Image (cartoon, rainbow, N blue to C red):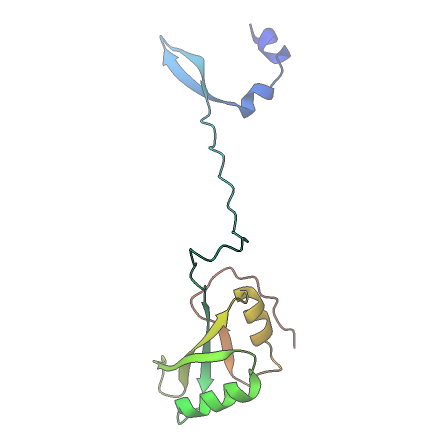
Length: 152
């Protein structure tokens, strides 16, 4: 019986899940079909000229976390810094953020992106050339963004 099983092609393993049951002291091989994945429907975005039904305008926010600022820096100082370094994007809000220690302060900066992509925003804004020496700048609340790091 083992020789017959070895000669059978093993392509069936992709479509079936082997299950083993103990029956009267021997393991019996029972095969169950894998559930098939349902195909995802295709999504389209309309390009027609009919204006009777209107869609919403999509706006995105890009949020940066700025830290290691001098304690006496105010929101106005950060707004002036951003206006001089990043003039491509509109500032939506600048909030002081509670720092872990009293020796520095942090800020959460929200930008209005419009139709621009979030990844492109972070690639453009998180560069060492745009920010003063020693400031820590990173995306706020996002993980796995895969932004290339700057080598010094």
